[in-house]
Structure formats: structure tokens, C-alpha cells
Image 1: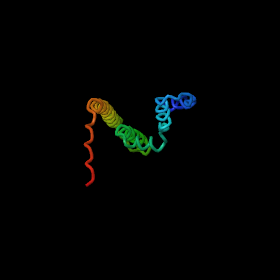
Image 2 (image 1 turned 90 degrees about the horizontal axis):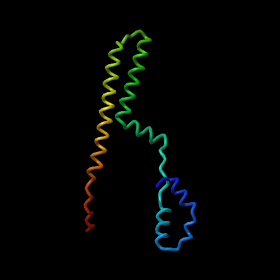
Image 3 (image 1 turned 135 degrees about the vertical axis):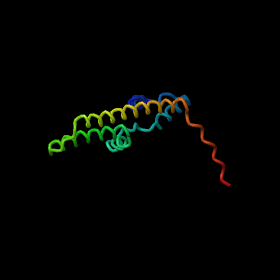
Image 4 (image 1 turned 90 degrees about the vertical axis):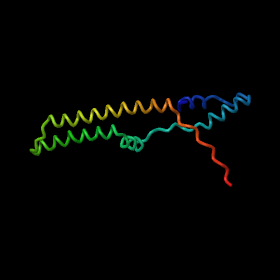
Length: 121
């Protein structure tokens, strides 16, 4: 249930129903946590943990570095830069395919239930 749905439900006068079942529904709705909105720090943290984002940044740094070195008179052959970018692009594509497969395996094989905790002696 989205945050907007909760706003609509909260705007309805839930006190008009006296049935105990409605009271349980009302209590459950009131206990719903507010929607977690990602903040800038969490987005940056997630990006820095992403192998695909890191590979993309490495490619960007390689291109900028080759341009800067070209301005300083150090010549890097353009085909070498293309090879590095092609290698990074294939890595990003492969990592994306691996992530899709990983999610599919997770969906097909849910984790086993946790064993019961024995009572303290």
C-alpha cells in the first residue's frame, strides 16, 4: 500500500464502523510505517556499492584522463581507449545479466525457515 493510499484511507472517518473486524483493519492501517523516501546519502551509498556504477565511473575517469593527457602532449592511442571502454561495457552488461539471474534464483528458492530458538536454561 503506497503512502498516497494511506492518506486517502486516513482521510475517511474510520470511526463510523463499529464492527470489531473494522476496528482491526483500522488499527492495522494506523500502524503502517511512513513510506521510506531515499535521501541523497543512501542513494550515493548504494551507488558506491554497485559494481556496475564503479565500472562506469572508471570508464569516465579513463576518458577524462586520456583527454587531459592529450592536452599535456602525452598521446594515448584512441583504439586503446576504445578497448578499455569496450571491456568496461562488456563487464557492465555481464554484471547486469548476473544480477537478473540472481534475482530469479532468489524468487525461485526462498530462504529456509529459521530453526526455533531453544529456551534459556
